[in-house]
Length: 584
Image: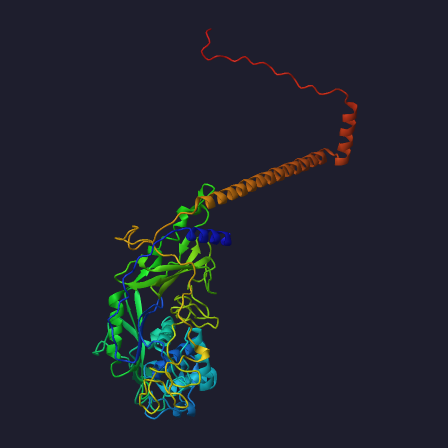
C-alpha cells in the first residue's frame, strides 16, 4: 500500500505546473577578524555565515569538546580514573592544568569538569587512557566519531589539542561536533557550569580545601560579571596555543533558534568575532515550524479521490511535528524550495514514506519526513543513526549535510575548498607555520612545505557542491506576486482526472469483490454452525429417551418406506379484509 500511494503521490506532483519567484537575498554584512569562522543553526544545521569554514586550522583546546562527548558516551560518570605518570607529565610546560598529580583518583565526572572548565590537559590524557588504554588508540576513536558526524576536513592526534602537525580541524567540522555535543544533557550540564570543586587531590589537601579544590570556567560569555557576557550563551569551550592562536566555540539560544559560533586562528578578537556572528544570526534569521506552513503535501488528504472516497477516508499524510527550516526574516515560508526524496536514512520513522528537503537558493535550510498518519513511527529523532546528515538534514550526532548529497563513506558532500594536501603539504589560507610565522596562512605539514589551494586528503575529501534532493517542486506564488497565495503557504494541487478514474474503478472492483466473498463465507459458516447445533440437540434428546442415533435412523427409514402418500400443501385460507370505515 505504501508503494502504491508513493507512486500516486509522485504522479500527482509531476503533473502540477508551478512558477518559482525570486526570494529575498541571503543576508550578508558581517565580518570577522579571525582567519576562519562560522555561525550555524543547531537544529537544522543551516550555515548562516562562514569564512574559510572548510579550511583546516589548529583547534587547540576546543578539541576537548569531542573528547568529552566520547567519554560521556563510553563511561559511567562514577567510574574511577587513576592518573598515570604519563598522563600528568606528558604535556607541554605551562599548559592548562587543574593541579591533578600522579596517583590521584577522581571520578569520570570530576575529570570532565576539570577537562571542560579548567581545560586540564592531564585530565584529557587520563580520560583517554581510561577509555582506550592509550592516547593513540583514543585518537583513532576521535577520528571515527568525527567521521560519523560528517566531518570531512579534520584529523585528531591527541585528546587535548596541544600542538601537533597532524592535529587540525575546520570551523564547519567543529560546529558539527558542538552540535552533537549539546544534544547530550550531561555535556551541557558540565560545560555550562561556572565553577566546580575537585576532591581527593594530593596538591589540595582536605585541611586546606575541605570542600575540594576550586576551578572556574574559562569561557567568559555566560559570566554576567564579564564585559564579554552575551545574553543567551550557555555552552562552549576556549582554546589557545602559539600555533593555533585564539579558538572559541560558543552556543547561544534565543527563542526557537540555537546558534553555534566557531572562531579559528583568532587574533585576540575571538569574543568580538563571536558576538558579531551571533548578532548577525539572531538579527537576520527566523526558525519556522514546517508543519504549521507546509500545505502542498498534506493537501492530498482533500484532493485525491478514489472511488468517490477522498484519501482522507483511507490514507492521511502528516509532516514531522518537530521539523523546522531557518530562512531570512525578510522571506516567507514559500520562498524555501522543497525537494521530495523517497530515499530515507536508516533512522527514519517506520511510517515515513518520503522526506522533504528544503533549500533557499543553494543553501540547505531544513527537512521534514512525510508520514502516514496512524501508523506507528520510530522514536522520533528522524536523524541518521550513524550521525551523518543528508541534504542538509540533521544527523543523530547533530550534524547536517552541507550543500550536497551524502557520500557512500558517510561523509557529506561539501563545496570544494582549499585545504590540506594528500601528501601532508600545506594548503593556502589554512593556518600558521610551526615556527609561529604565517606563510600564506597555510597549515604546516610534516615536511614543512606549502601548497596552494590543495584539497583535503582522499580519506576526507570534499565532493563538489550538488543537490542531493530529488523531485524539485518550486513553490507557488507568494503574497503580492502573480499566482496568488499568502507568503507563508504553498500551492496545493489536484490529481489528474484520468488517474483518478482508473484508481476509482480498480478500488470499486476490489471493494465489491471483497464484500461478496466476505458475505458468502459468512453465510456458509453460519449455516454449518446451525446444522451442527441442530444435530447436537437431536442427539441429546435421543439419549434422554433411551435411543441411539443409529436406532433412530433405522426407525426413520422404516417410517419413510411405509409412507406412500405424497404430501399436499394445504390451500390458502381467504381472509376478508375489513375496511375500517365500512358501513354497518
